[in-house]
Amino acid sequence: MTLDLTDKTVLVTGGTRGIGRAIVEAAAHAGANVAFTYRSSVETATELVESLGGPDKALAIQADAASADDAIASVQAVTAKWGRIDGLVVNAGITKDGLMIRMDADAWQSVIDTNLTGAFHVAKAAYRPMMKQRAGSIVTISSVVGVMGNAGQANYAASKAGLIGFTKSLARELGGRGVRANVVAPGYIETDMTAGLGDAADGLKGQIPLGRLGQPDDIAAAVLYLLSDVSTYVTGHVLHVDGGLAM
Ligand code: NDP
Image (cartoon, rainbow, N blue to C red; front, side, top):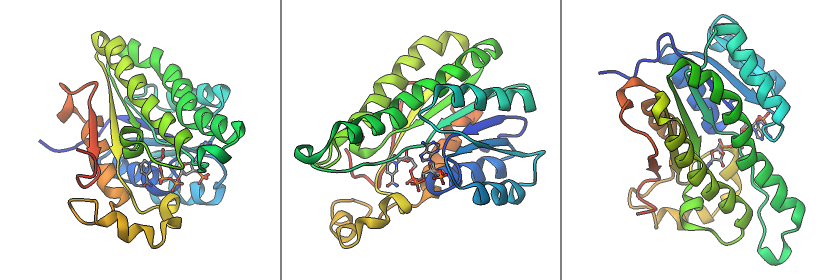
């Protein structure tokens, strides 16, 4: 069996950079029609569509993950173009770190709005078309931090832990309709989000059994598995892709 996504249509939120981009490229390489959202990188998004084979194969949608209207418009753009939505990858996420003593309510709320409520909006928008198709795969991108907690990331950890309960609930609601929902929980992956780790990265490596930070492609491979028909009996699962950090 191969991880073949031919004839499938996939929507990835936050697809211009880092992990989302690796997922977009891997899904396209596996044969899928791929739509992706982004917040502000218009030029990168346009170039990415071209590199994936142009507008017949790929669609870039400027959408704020925290907006319900943008989520509805994104899913409608996908179904209008390709007639269906087989895969949804809820990847867009932000951090606004700080110790609790200094974390203001805006830093708390904006991270929850984008990372967790954003997942609610886009999964709700995809819910009905997937139910009607009686098929679909939803993958949410949580984090090792949602499983273990992290000093200075109470807002982010809460959003990522929330995604796990949310996704398991979707798996229970939608299983009877042939729609699966799973979580990928990455460890520390080398992207713009972790670029500021600096020397702390060396300390982290010592805690990771595989002794290295991860690459976006490590996460894309796990997501591809969950989107593909190779995993049709897997739902409600949290797949840790973290070099063994959380176990
Ligand atoms: P990056 O910061 O490298 O990329 C973020 C992507 O999300 C960009 O494409 C960005 O678009 C998009 N984005 C950000 N905010 C919004 C928004 N409000 N609406 C729409 N799109 C948005 O992040 P990573 O690739 O590192 O992370 C991707 C996901 O993986 C996140 O959910 C993150 O929490 C999670 N994760 C990351 C880990 C890591 O170590 N890197 C570890 C564990 C989980 P634009 O280019 O327009 O800004």
